[in-house]
Length: 337
Image 1 (spheres, rainbow, N blue to C red):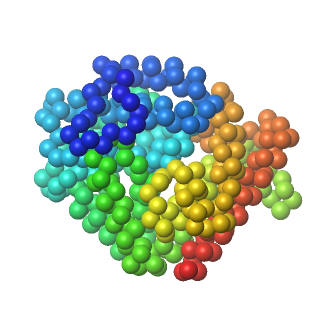
Image 2: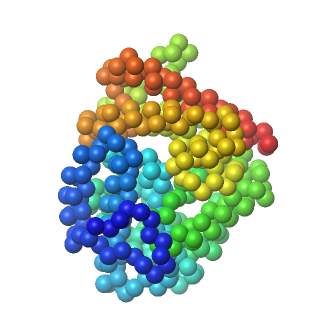
Image 3: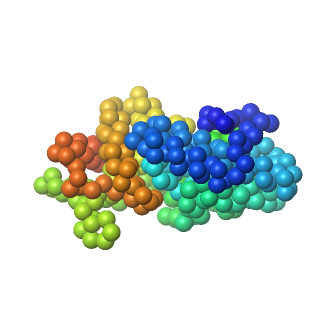
């Protein structure tokens, strides 16, 4: 079986261990339920199954179109890029290749489409926002990627800056990792040259969902299919994710997981110290309900009435810590210091 550790040898792509995407799905479904309550193991497994899927996709495209015409790196974004996936997860990925779009993009878009369809069969739904390597926005040559970054910055609109924030969570899974690093370094360079850009990115995530009211009461959804449940991704994870992503951009930190970012950032900003414990608590709470999660949407909700008194106290404490971290980060970033 293909190892889930990142493959960065320039001319080496691991051969697939399975003959079909359906085979991968069966193996993945069996393993996932066994480790559903262990966040780190679960995310290592997600990497392994996406890598197996990608390896098979590369084989299929090679048989139809020949060997990849240039070095490339396939990368993950979103919760996969941050290694914060639950039992169910959708697709967020892209490709950087050597050479120009007008020469090689067609090949790599075809590879992206094969990966997209393979992952859908394996059990990873297609991204509704089309943040996938099959879309021209997320599949470029290195220099064209830099031009794409320039365009997003020049547009200076909510959607364009959101694309840039999404890209910052990119993590290489297979291929020539140096290609992705060079593009991310270019973003860090732009932020250093134009400090206003970081402020604009901060303003892009100015809204914070409230999980606790002024009286310390948890605020679950009041109606709909998840009435009585708290959207733990919006009110719990995102304050930590957004804060650490902004500071990672500010300080040129390449780590993508929120826990790794907290450890790096805490060396620079003391107010981040110890915050990894609160984030781990949120990951654990979500994992505790893994057996009741049967769809992608289920993963984002925690039933409040089923929490113990201790769990509620820990949840409230984590939400408070996340809100405080988010507010301090925005104040720091938007002050221009």
